[in-house]
Length: 397
Image 1 (cartoon, helix red, strand yellow):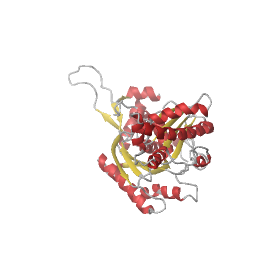
Image 2: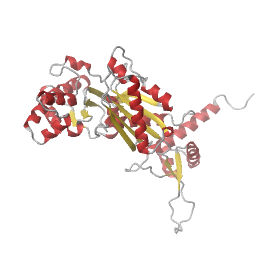
Image 3: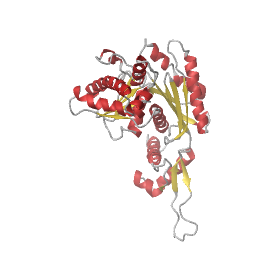
Image 4: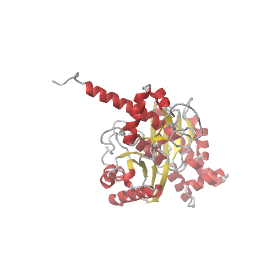
């Protein structure tokens, strides 16, 4: 008979994994304002985890072997005469690999590469203007692959350095990473099995998600969603899409359809899912101009009367969209995001002025995102880092 109680070895392994996880999580989160990893002593880690000194150093040795930590030179200067052994110092190895984030739109593809703390190292983008009725799926996948590869080249990293990737698409995506709804050719074109393609092509562990959900994740981590338990990120470029955070958790629905806004077809004064970017461009074209949404908004900021009239029209329509979200999910804050956000101050002014007509107090605060046109890419990077972090201690990696 073997010695020891049944289950003892398994319990020891579980405790070991818990200790490894506790130290790694603290080291992963410890950083300076410039994004560089903070130096951690054994005492720092003891205080953060409650582990003994011997256990901390033992765990750090294993994490160094696995590539997640590195030991730093001691901080004692060469001419110091302090007695005693210098403290061992450790830091998270944020450069142990990279992650890739992609915004797979139908007019523009954007990609970025970041280290394991989310610091962006390289970027690339491409204008594609894909048509879901005429563009071959293979062409879309090849363009996406090429944009991701260009971002890696900009970061000076090869595809073998990628530990995880995430891709945002303008379609509902279930928790399993696929579009569950059938019969919508636009959704089927925008998400034609991207994760599987990148896994076959490069071996990357890839997550696909709805673009508005990823934008909401970026706002939650980096933007106007920080410290807010209930907020909505509203992508408002070509089509409206909403990423909903309810009580601190992303709301998905049974099949990933939460935040899809096809219901706007039925809303008086809205009538379609066309976003602000498309609406302003169409309004400018109808009056004989060819300005982009950004150009119209810039002219409105300068006081151009014609541009202000277009912004008021688009803003009143946007107000009704925000009002429906307020009625459906009662957020504390609605963040207008995407390419138009940088110049959206005139639009936000209209929404704030008009919203009391439709929503009683307390009304949601309406803000323009400060994360720029690549808000989905930033959310994708955050999602990819989350994935690497969750499986960091898995035997298969």
